[in-house]
Amino acid sequence: MPNIVIRTPEGVFDAEARARLAKAVTDVAKTVEQGGDDPQQAALTWVLIDEFKPGTFFAGGADPLERLIPIVVFFHYPAGVLDDVARADAARLLQEAISAAKPVGDPRPVMTSVLMREVADGTWGGGGAIWRLPDLAKAAGYKHLQHLIAP
Image (cartoon, rainbow, N blue to C red; front, side, top):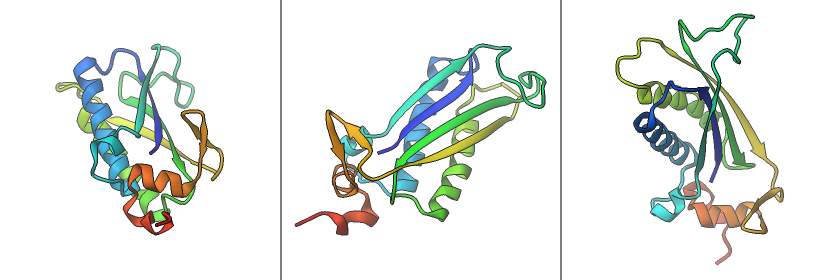
């Protein structure tokens, strides 16, 4: 049940590539969070692709767009859902998924910076209510956290 914001240079991903990107990132989230298999549970993964204008991103004081595609990912997830192994998997799988989603024929490599932000229990609001980890485990179908759900 993460919220994922992907910051990408404007014009790199066309509509088709953005759709591939959103689907691939959603699949990564389901894998690392051990989400349920119900499509309604997958709908709880929100992905926002936010494009920045060319000339507004710098690495080492220079614009890197001629040689690579810089992508910044903010991965917000409920506290208690990901452990160290899952976070490492998320970083690797997001790099792979974003690289695979780029338009065919673009020779530039993708370079991701993934910032994982754990949202403290009791501070996730949705639909006008505060959701705690047991509520999230039930809604998202977290396979490894089903023991938190009251019978």
